[in-house]
Length: 232
Ligand code: SF4
Image (cartoon, protein in one colour):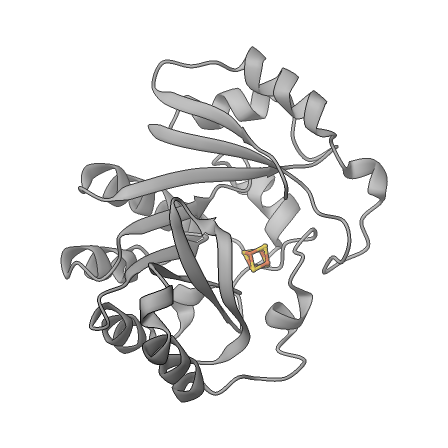
């Protein structure tokens, strides 16, 4: 596992549990608004994964969970064994993913190695809309993988959430409705954090939380529970 960050204790990253958060390095997307540029560019320091596991093991009594975030964790070859080790400590595991690797997600779910998945949906599931945000390497096959992962998550008995970071001019209220019409379960709309980004983004892209609430109110939907995530 190539790790670029380790937050020892968080009270907001796993619903209802204290978590350590592990940030993997490297990503198969290049989202303009990404607020972890060092992880995506593979710059900055790395963190020894044995150190991280040892810290988690020694402090497992203070934790309820570990969140594997990134970067994109599912491109890491060592993810399965890393997560297996954490599960052997009796902790819950949450995976944050862009969901482009359905086979990885499926094997972790079927072997009961993860307890919660947070899946980013960057835009309505259309090639050009995704490419606008994540970059030109995004393909129809990536889109198929995302659709497949959504199906896997929804059809399995696992806690999950979908989430979209809302930015002007990349998203409209109609986009949120379009995404919501194609998913089931909890769907969080979150504010764009412009403190540090992968590419230059005008701070006029930030949608304020009151406006996000208005979008959410206009998009109410029977198949999923759309909510505003505050504090991001
Ligand atoms: S925001 Fe995009 S580029 Fe950044 S880690 Fe997530 S998927 Fe990768």
